[in-house]
Each structure stands twice: as C-alpha cells, then as structure tokens.
Image 1 (cartoon, rainbow, N blue to C red):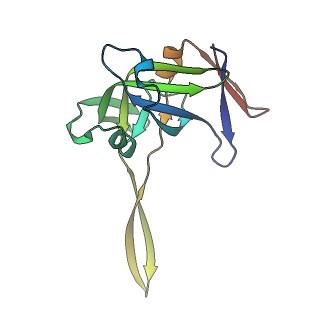
Image 2 (cartoon, helix red, strand yellow; image 1 turned 30 degrees about the horizontal axis):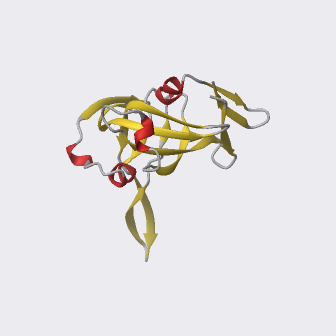
Length: 161
C-alpha cells in the first residue's frame, strides 16, 4: 500500500489527513465509487473505534440523517445514541491511491456552546453552533490493513502498510 502522510497541526496539536468519501455501492468494491466522492479533512483519532463524520457531510453524501438508524456511541462524557451511516467508501492519496470500505460511520451532531456576556449591564446568553470534526477511527486503519506511526518529536505521522 505504501504510505499515507498525516499532517501535524501545531495550533490544535493533532494529526490530520485528507480523505475522499462516498456512499458504498452495495455488491460492488470501493472502485465503483471512484470519482464520485467528496473530499474532507479528518482528524486521526487513535481512541476512536469507528470513523465519524458531521451531519452536514452526511447530507452532502445524500443521506437523510433523520431517518438513519441509531447506534450507541461511548465517549468520555458517557453513552449517547447517534445516527449510523452504513457502507461508506474512503479514499486515501499517498504513495498510491487506495480505497477501502468501512462497515459504517457514526454521524456526529453539531456541537453547541453557550457564550455568556454582558451588554448594557445585562447578562446576555448566545448559543454558538460549532461544527463537529470528522474523525478517522481505527476501523479505517484496520480496513486498510495498515498501521499508524506517529513521531511526536519530529511531528510526522504516517499510515503505512
């Protein structure tokens, strides 16, 4: 497979990779969706067993988020039920162009944050809508039959297989 580089973002202290993705064509290999994918930046999350995408990206792919089945997702804040989009093809560009199908991805809701400020002596509350990040989980690395190498000293990351 060669190597797929992970870029280090020093401001956010995370490794990111650009991924092309498309809804999988049942009964066909990922090659069936070649050219019909959407490109998105993903944060590599070594603690995530499943790849996750935003609601907006799921909608761009043509999914009706409200009608997707719900699955339990565990995290540091506890257990939550989130929409699940089955059969998704992921495309990576490294030494060579490589596509794989993951059984499905979790769809993350838009994050909400309350901001409290003062205006003319009155307390004012504003609700900010922040986009959830797309997360590349270990399921994608397993589907690639690859391993991840992170060199924190030199800020270099690779998916290699």
